[in-house]
Image (tube, rainbow, N blue to C red; front, top):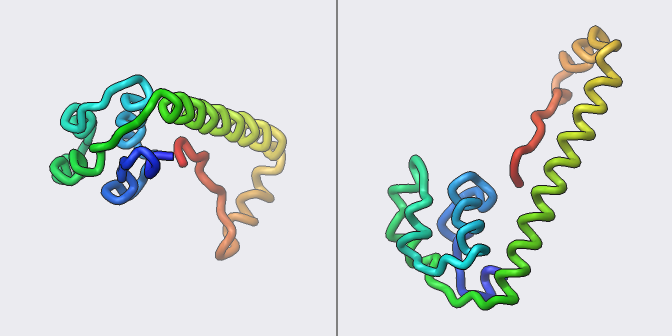
Length: 119
């Protein structure tokens, strides 16, 4: 969808759902079009790529694409919350088997996974 608007964010950022990129996408969805303002959302090491970001964020997004971007971001947020809820449920159900879980966790290649906060 972003490519169709000539926005090449994915070519500059390594995690297009990371904090900086997500802030940029939220701003785009809310109507911000100025590439310089959007690039100012960059944090930490991404600040070094500000010039590249400005070029990548020069696009032409229309109202339909904005609506689709908002819808996609809202859906991602929903899915993240569902994963968190299900992970919590699993954690509660296996809590009485903690010793077994620790034994399984000691097997190479088997480990608890962290709950994703972004995709």
